[in-house]
Length: 88
Ligand SMILES: [Zn+2]
Image 1 (cartoon, helix red, strand yellow):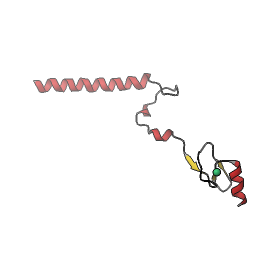
Image 2: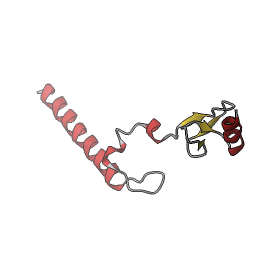
Image 3: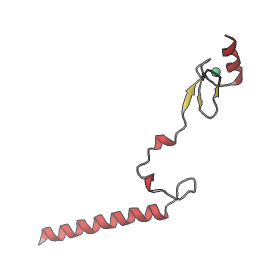
Image 4: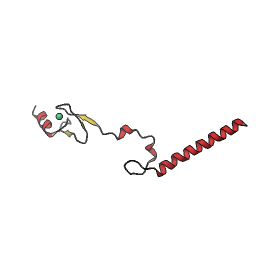
């Protein structure tokens, strides 16, 4: 009888936890204001991080969105370094 009571409590807690999780997804918001998606729970936070690339001339690390790329595919931190590298 005692075991049945504990199983009932565990079952209710499990169902309540699942329900609360679904409600959070349904009504939750991401930090950018977009509605939460089902894959948010399994999302890898590193996937949102921007790639950092090293300048081929000076080695400075720059975000991919700020990097300049020449015809050969080499990455540079600025236009001056791209020009210096092409002259070398
Ligand atoms: Zn550079």
